Length: 113
Image (cartoon, rainbow, N blue to C red; front, side):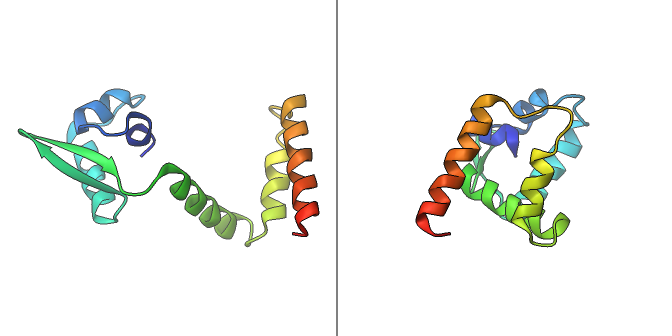
């Protein structure tokens, strides 16, 4: 999905070429067919090729995936998910990231959320 979102639309070959350590072409086509069956992709035909496109905007898919992640791994707690993100010992937050988070928290408090 990341490749399709990045390119906007792509053939199975283009998608496979973008993958690190790409699986066999048949595996890519199978995965694309599954994603289409689940409603994440659609395709148009251009000659012998299928051109795959996402069915929902990336921002909508991101929010949906994040809600699922929080529900699955953090028992529905956004605070626990945020704590896990902020407690990444491998890469501390930059000054810019801390400033952005501070501004977001101030905005949420001002809105009464």
